[in-house]
Image (cartoon, rainbow, N blue to C red):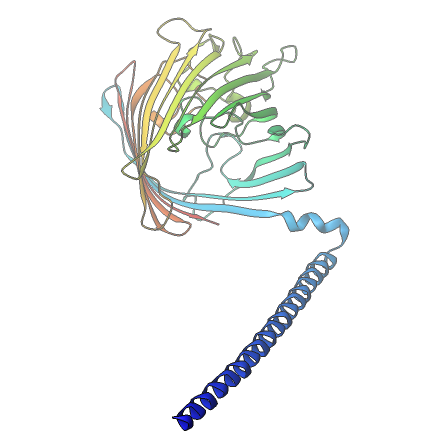
Length: 419
């Protein structure tokens, strides 16, 4: 019994000693681990510092690579596009179908845009087309492989001072400063770039509502005689846009456009074409019979239906200087889905009805009924994103002259490449 007790006591003492030794070892290991972790953190901190220094050094070397006078080159952006189009046109004259037009056309554009400082941007763009057509950048493939003309399509400055957030002062030959619901062409053709001065102002009213105001004065051309004043265009527009929690939106607004010194003047197209056509506008003895003081009202609603973006829009124009029956133009339309990623597609449709003197015929859609006013009809479009920066599109016009009921059909098949 005594021997058993002695043996148990020895074992107990050995166990206590072993535990004591084990505890000391664990404590030492914890200390070693803590020291190792501190060293790792110190090494990581030093490594991050070295990386940051190398990055800053690389940035400084890149900046030093350019002379101070050429720093603006770093902010330069170049973009452009090439469109190849097949176009087929069928039209009636006095109820009889004329010979069809079938042609292939090119459009090429390249633009250079630069931020010269924190408050001023510059934009330049060259495009195909002709000097006597402000609403088209197409060149028809013809004339025995002759060279195609390139013209100055845009050249403007955009001053947006830091102290007035949302304000832009623009001057030169510029993109249209006025909003168009659904990018419609009831009043303005897509390719029209006015020349003059304009201002734009975007004002947030709350988290969901914004107000947009724009206005400008533009020079249309020289008068018929040395004593007459130049023809000018003045415009102002304002609209509100509310974006809801589900990202749908509703906007509506009004515009006013007035042409100075256009009544009793020769057609503005004579300024560059050398002859008058008036594009549906009423003329007397080779001059405009009416003035053009146009009030526009427009609205647009956009939302998602089953994950497809959808927009519906409407536009109405009334010329207060023209008599009833000649003064109104309106358009309603919709777009469904959006051609953005490869394999995506978009469908568009609108219907419009334009009296002869609702707008200036030279400046609205040059494809609708052959260009101009005094017509009504449909526009259909299907666009498919074939690959990145590469789209195909089919557009079809089905129109008629409001006076003669002569029909007009136009099919366009496009391949568009962008960079």
